[in-house]
Length: 131
Image (cartoon, rainbow, N blue to C red):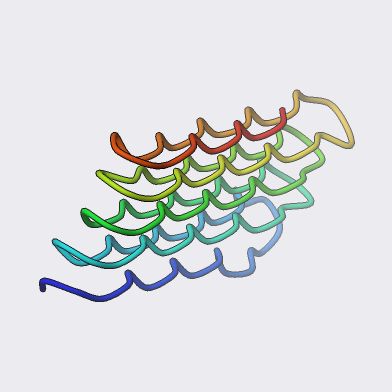
């Protein structure tokens, strides 16, 4: 595919007690020449286990923006990690990393995702996700 935007990754589905939250899907990549990457899906919350991780944003074509990483889910235990932002190639901005999920019980907060890099000709790097 030479042109077209990548689709967004789906959010993680609901979980039944005792199971880790489902991870969000990854965003699709943009077309070879034109098109932005899709955003990553968000992880799903789990009340009795770790939260799901956010999906990664898709990468852009030669012209287009990288997709944003999905957010990690909150949890009673460890929060899910945020997904990484997708990168731009030539012209376009990098996607933002997703925020890590919070631990509201015993555990640690999730790690924020890394920012995508901006295009080598024109473009800004994205922002790192918060932990």
